Image (cartoon, rainbow, N blue to C red; front, side, top):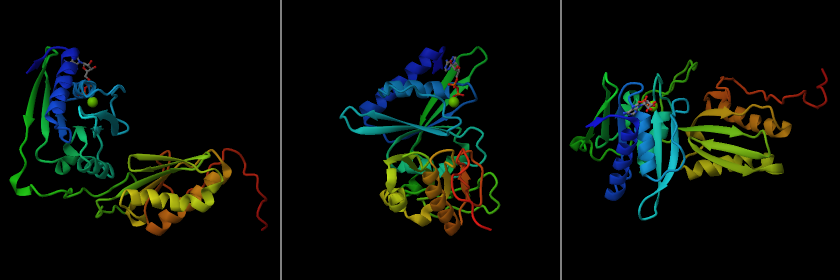
Length: 288
Ligand code: ADP
Ligand code: MG
């Protein structure tokens, strides 16, 4: 089918959304194939509009994924997940985030799926967008069929090894619950992210007594436990002196004990995190 301008691409995305809504086909994967600038993200914008999503869809290139909530005609809540693996040499933990989205019955749209093809379900929709010399686009929609050999395979197979930029001991994810933990204790509102789920907690003066249990309770909600944490990122400051000290102690202990990489919020890896209080710490100097 020929698309001659941007509006037609948006309309095409919206019409596919309407079809998925009316067919109740809302837990599917759409793989988008096409060069840079072909219109993959533009199509996704149209799709989101057609699903009734008001938040403007922006390219997830730097964040890798974005999620948007929408409602089916019967008012049930659904999620559109938009992934973009462009130039990501190793998808690392995003592989797990993606496979969780797929298992959770989300509507998943993926740009540049080459590195994670092996975890996409066989019965996905493939949309090819070809950019012609005259600026028009030729689009081809393929509804793939389930692979009869693999029809019962629920969980991803052949997970690529988890490698992080400067890790010298790449490890393989054996658990399908591999968790990336992000923690920010720099303000009275603690922010905890377990993969792409974010929790906020008005921790106030309870941080020291309750933080460990708070994290563990959230892990349990993800059917995970301490040993499922494969990476930790910590907001190392500046911010609350006590908050940073308590948070750093916990992440340092966890990362050391689990033997997993620990990053600050700039993505720099550390053997242990030293909080950046943003000012000299007002404590008594240790006696030599
Ligand atoms: P991709 O995600 O494939 O890299 P984008 O959707 O981000 O591409 O960008 C496509 C660009 O091309 C946008 O700036 C859009 O305005 C423009 N454009 C022009 N004509 C079309 C068309 N027919 N379909 C989609 N995009 C178009
Ligand atoms: Mg794009």
